[in-house]
Amino acid sequence: MPPQVKVSKEQIKTEAFQMTLENGFESVTARKLAERLGCSTQPIFRVYTNMEELRVELYGMGTERMRESMARYKGKSEPAYVNLSMAYISTARNEKNLFRLIASVDDLNIPGDGEFLLKGEALSYPKILPGADDLTDEQKGELISAVWYLVHGIATLIVAGRTTISDKEIRGLVTETYSGLLSELKGNP
Image 1 (cartoon, helix red, strand yellow):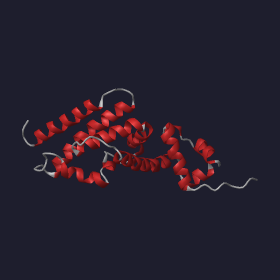
Image 2 (tube, helix red, strand yellow; image 1 turned 180 degrees about the horizontal axis):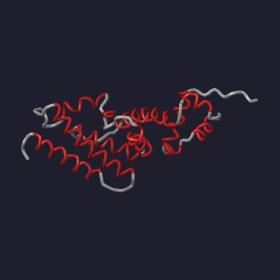
Image 3 (cartoon, rainbow, N blue to C red; image 1 turned 120 degrees about the vertical axis):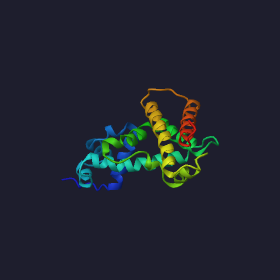
Image 4 (cartoon, one colour; image 1 turned 90 degrees about the vertical axis):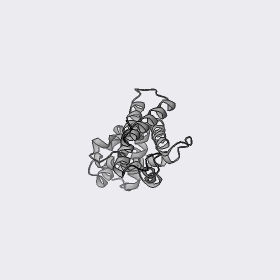
């Protein structure tokens, strides 16, 4: 009997995440993962009850990578909400399988409405929304949510190959959405 290969949880996660980035999570099977790790499927299922449990862990790794990728975005000197929007779309364009993993949040029964993005430096964005000083926190949240839904929708269409919208058009839509809702919230329809 050949000796058992020792495979750590970290090795399993790292290899599965790499496979996800290369070909999407749907390509990660226990058999293919074990093959890449040079072991049987037994070590994988010793650590994870099933592949969905692994996927949830990969989702967490994906959100961290998404934040890091967005933090590296070098955009124009625009308001924070525009830069954050463009960073998200840029990351979706450049790392489609990462975006697909993040967008699969509904399949994983993980509450998610973009709050994973609002960590670190991004936490200060609601405080520096141009022209929104006199809005309540609830109204600021509404403003951020409206922009988020627009941007996530655009990113989804881009990743699915259903639009070729330019960055200039995206900036225009984001700015119009922000300005229009800001005006409405202030009672200036």
